[in-house]
Image (cartoon, rainbow, N blue to C red; front, side, top):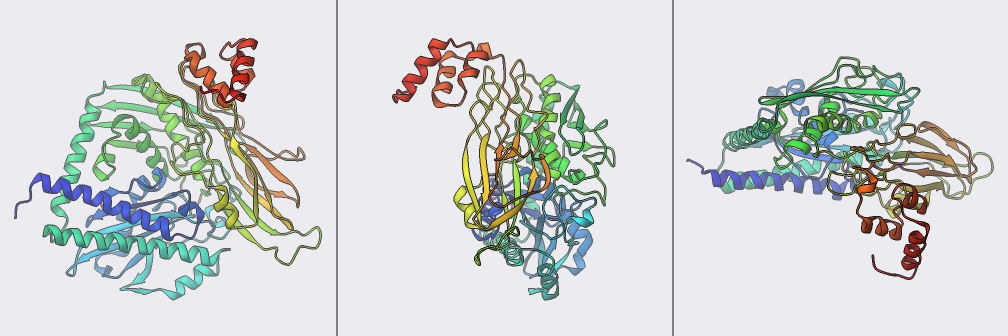
Length: 567
């Protein structure tokens, strides 16, 4: 039976809705707040060769694009001859999954009348995987947690109870982790059920036809976007905090016929601590940056990603080899897009944003009953992971977004959800006035956040911050965003990365970084400056020094704002 292009387009759209439902099933059933509240996950469907056909809009580029490469590893490791209906496969291999041990990837084969027709895959970040915990302090991947090689979690529908016991015995939050694994398994089953329905509706016996349609059209559309650009070569660079010393990211970008090359020669070498990045994660964010700028409307799949070729020297910090510590690979990986944009701006001016906060402003609390005095009987141990965002960079024609994660795309966790999972108190969480870099278009604001423990508890804070010494840089005359701040409420200084003890009664005060501005501040619309001051987005000092408002103008605007005037 010959199937029309219109029917194939309908099927393509259906597949995208299938994987979105798959992702939403994971959000609804996950135990970890990082999945349930922040959306730190991915979901996708693959053909029988392991080529990704569609992925959910819900999810992060680090998971989504990295997972695109994962299924072929599962096929190779398990072997097609060992795959059966009812099987479920699992791994958290940083080099064959999504970059660190804290991401669990589940792959499920899809069978129709005994014939393997494709695969479903999903990934989620888990709060704890044992070892040192989620932090920078490991000296090798062996210290960072329990390693799960590519293996069967279930064989013909029978869950490996020994594997479950091994996992439970090696992590701090066993119920939460096993619950997350079952949520991952279930979301793939939801996707498979919807795929079976679609194939029955359209009379398909395999996915070869729709696979060819999706991949051919995606490839040709992506190449059309690339070949519409002027060929050229440009270099980009960024210096960021690193751990004990600054890290230099360097990229050479080459636009040529049918492809764009991204070469990371000259980037700093592997670090001693866990901020190193497996190449799969570097590729994920480099491809994401290029697709955002060049082919944003083409759905992600194997063919639309293929023309973006990423290379990096082995044992550079963006191509760390086993057994390098990689727990916080996102701290460097999230800076990859802004480094790409530094080069791309020289080839395609007025297309890419100024630098933003970059990496997520994450931290994890390891809480326990206080040990300096008697603790109340209700005091308990808990692991609480909190996702937060700084400001994004201003864009060529519009301000940056406040407290919005770019490039990761995850959501900031609500205070209520955070306090519900452990004895944590969020004393303050608000936009950080004045943190967005000045410019014709203003950078997005970061946040202030004060965090402590409930009465009777002390805690360790696993800090995962950057931009303390190297804030986001403006573009085309825009000014830098504000740097990250962190200290205890008694003035005790704290480091931007690493496990640090916080005694009973102390509060950690944090200021998350702002995005940078785009264009010269004097070119900003006067009404926009007045509105920013009235809404508290900029300070009086900023209004005067960066935008040139007089004392009288500032006093008038603040007076009107206090009276409830509309701006």
